[in-house]
Amino acid sequence: ETIINQDSRDLDFRVESDGNANALFVEGSSGNVGIGTGAPSYPFHVTGSGDTVAAVTAGASSIAALNLGNATNLADGGIRYDNSANALILRAANAEAMRIDSSGNVDLYQGSNLTWRYAAGSTIRGSISTDSADNITFSNTSGNTERMRIDSSGRAIIGGGITLGNGQTYAAA
Image 1 (cartoon, rainbow, N blue to C red):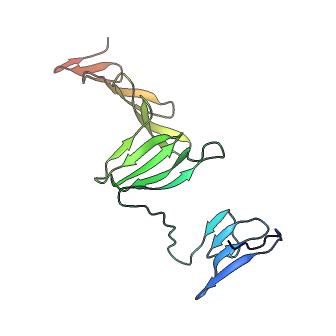
Image 2 (image 1 turned 90 degrees about the vertical axis):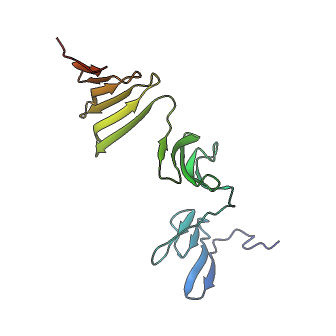
Image 3 (image 1 turned 60 degrees about the vertical axis):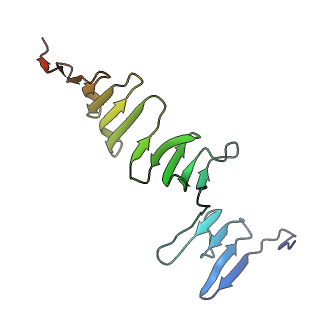
């Protein structure tokens, strides 16, 4: 075992490489670790002069992950790559929220309901939602006003006044 700075002094630790004075740097006052920087702003800070890549790799049938969370739940959210499924996975609230598979298909998960929103700044311009009754709803405007619904039987209800189904058209009274 090798211990550096056992007396806990405010002493920086630096490792040089060929052409990089701060290949590895530990700031004594904060404990922040820098790769490529002598002034790490975060607990782990990587800096490069061009494209900068931090790699997390795993075996061919394993998961490589960056877990995000807090002291109670260390992996409440995160980014994972499932090497066996060739899928990129985003997690939130300790559950899979989105998956991009090897064909480029995007699967979104949110319990029994799902809403996709288009926003300009903080203003919602439109949305597509599904619900537990297998309806798909299309809405627009900042008030999220429903404009069309496709119900579980495949009927399209447009604007609440016209229903298209079984080849018939109905107008609102």
